[in-house]
View: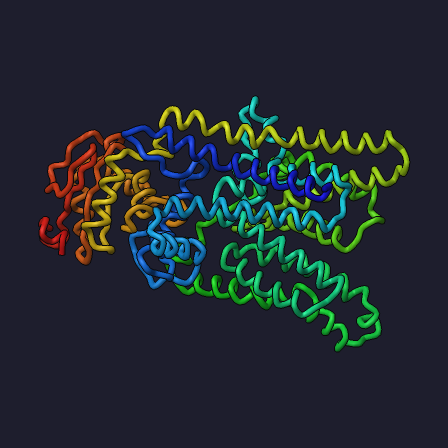
Amino acid sequence: MALRREGAFFGCAAVFMCALITLPYLYAWLAAGPDLSFGGFLLNPIDGNSYLAKMYIGWRGGWRFTLPYTLETSDGAYINLFYIFLGHLARWTGLNLIYVFHIARLLAAMLMAGSVFRFLRLFRLDSRLEKISYVLLIIGSGLGWLGLPFDILTSDFWVAEIFPFLSSYTNPHFPLGLTLMLEILRAGVNILSAPGTGWKFRMAGLSLLLGVVLPFGIPILILVFGATAISLVITSTQFKQNSRRNAFKLLIDHPVAWVLLGGGPVVLYEYWAIQLDPLLSGWNAQNLTPTPPVWDLAISLSPPLLLAAITNIKFRRRKNSEQKLLLAWMWLGLASSYIPFGLQRRFTLALYLPAVILAFIGIDAYRVSRPGNVGGENKARLLSVLLLILALPTNFVLVASSYPATQRHDLSIYLTRGEIDAYKWIEDNTPPDTLIIASPSSGLFIPAYTGRRVIYGHPFETVDADSQKSQLEHLISGDISAVVAFAKGFSDRRVFLFWGPREIALNNISPDLPVVYRSGGVTLYTLSPAGGFTENDLNQ
């Protein structure tokens, strides 16, 4: 009966998390009204629409990723396969891309909640502390809410990869990647305590999947397991006796070898493929994700980080192998996130999790250090509840913050019905290699809804983004004759000018060009780099 009640508690907590990450989206969809369509993203719609553009590649039947927000084309590579697979899934099921995205996001969040529970069980916390820590892990965040009165927006409001809740609120690949990481770590703990071939092959298979879903999870796991491997070799009697064969066998049997076996080839292929493709290489060069300042990260990870650091010092002699794994994850992750590297923020992946668990291990150690002391027991539980209370407001504010944007029908998260209809017309009536000239804000949506290319639409996935955006804004806001002259440089493809509410906001004119589509406040004009287009050409 007690086990059933415990299971019900953890299940209810997971359901509550899923409700929190779903209801704001449902409300935004219902609040659209008859003239608007919800774009599907409440947080970071720029990256959200880029995920849809990747899914469109799969929906169209492809598997190789090419940059949809860049004028030029290349052969591409087999990367971003998770979203391309979701696109294939949408085609097989007949579901809308956005529906598939959110179904995947919710399923990934549920899987993540289960993996967090199983991982937490490894540390054998007091029952009440385990429950509170679980709620904190899947719903909590940092102290960023304290900065709001001072107009300070810290990482816990926007760096989704650090926090399980924020990951689940934003996209499917972060929570699914975290799920795989936790299952790999669990398998690694089992290998370290009781080596078995089954766990090793399981770890290799999960690492392969992680390399596909969230490639940067592999270097983090190599870092964590590598630290334990180095410690093992240095302290092993075989190494001290200069038995290289036995020391080598220790490394082969160690989890780091199986992570390398499963995920290493995937990460190496992605790196090699990006370097060989000039467009992907250009994208990678500007795909910079710097880590926020130290003070920002400290606030965002506290109070768990602060408590984890204090208890780590106080109870430093009472660590088992599982705790050492967490310590390696937290401290090496924090240290690596400030190395001079373009993707340094990726090292912060899921750092909230080891910080929270180490904090509660410390609270539990404090409780155990006072056996029979009711006051010590009560203080430990009071501290855990205080930790929970301090860590909840940020995410509640985050969820509530979507309400004003939905009420004012912000066009960063909504599209007009006219735009949606025009995108559908473009998808049905233009060749796949068509170039659509549109404003930067429309350029974000066009590849996601039509698969057609634009001059600029994304700060990373448009190669030479700053220059292209500046050129495009100059074209759209100036004399339309400049747009016509620009289009003449593309004699190998059909070019159209998209003119809707976002373009009118930049230049309130009516271009004197041949019209092939006009409806709902959106007009599509043909441009003539190849001697002109006719409506019959469009249907060929």
